[in-house]
Picture 1 (cartoon, rainbow, N blue to C red):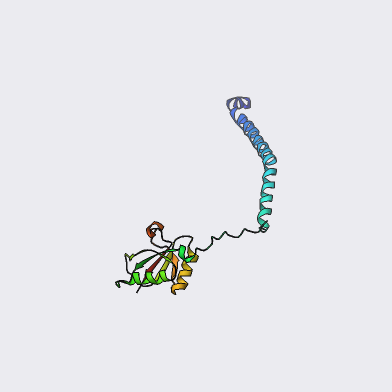
Picture 2: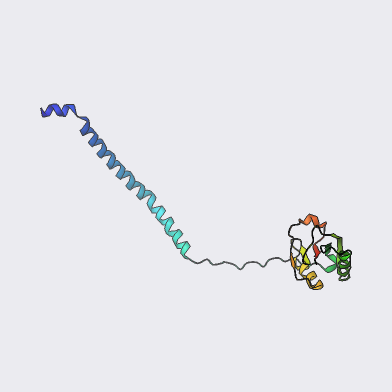
Length: 163
């Protein structure tokens, strides 16, 4: 009888043998992959950790930024806009600015009233704007805000007169 039950279920023994062989193959493949890939990967991780632990050092001093020379007053064009609503205020301010040696661009009214007098400058003309601020005793000097450089009609600086 024993012999008859073995003949009826031969798949069990075959399944156990195939599963055992597959397990051995899996262990061999895993071992080979660790042996082949593990060593270079470990070296790479060690080198990365060592590089991250070392402080950064500059090899050469940074070059100083190339500053463009400041334009002379007679090369700087200034647009003057009246933001206080008083008639003739922009022309009077333009005359004061012209007497300091600056070139006057456009003179007109600001689209909105301004509570403070301020100087705005195009990119690259901060030094000229600071000098104009010192000449006119205006402390509020800032880059263009709300205007594009094309709206200055070629002027380098903009003075908006406030109340």
